[in-house]
Length: 109
Length: 115
Image 1 (cartoon, rainbow over the protein chains, first blue to last red):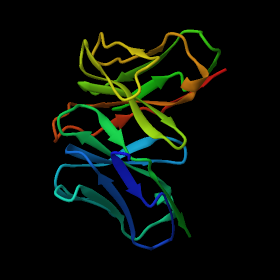
Image 2 (cartoon, rainbow over the protein chains, first blue to last red; image 1 turned 60 degrees about the horizontal axis):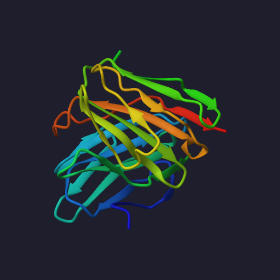
Image 3 (spheres, rainbow over the protein chains, first blue to last red; image 1 turned 180 degrees about the vertical axis):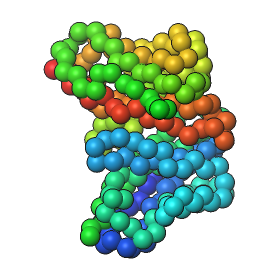
């Protein structure tokens, strides 16, 4: 079993829809990252969380440490949101990052 | 402009021919790391460095070497490349691993094909 599981693996949405991507992990962590990988391959860091909730524009990330679960929400989705969204965790007593397999999001206009 | 640069961006080579992929950051970051990305396997950490002269293995270090002689540079060395090292490689850096400074900045990626 992977330490970091993301769901769904693939997601197709209509423009304007509210989108949720989930990340569950099985180890104690010190931080959780959400990354976005564009179709051209570049990776951008969206959020780094250790507790609670963060918001940036139309993106919201939440984490529940007790339940070992995080969600990434996209409000009013747009075709330019089409990308791969990757969850990564830093283990509590280590310096390594462990990644989920990614969620492929396609937003249709 | 704050950035992480990698060179080369694309490389085709043959089995056994030593190569180096360079990574440089201009943000005075302490933490640097190398990842490889393969279809179906996602991103996996190869090596990381907490600071100059401090490096450690990630999840898939076999067949790779790194060095951190200067803060800004973190080259990835493949002494004897093999076809299973064909992959997309990313370098990344962050200020440190403190929770408020840990945003990762990624390089543009290097596509390597080993024949």
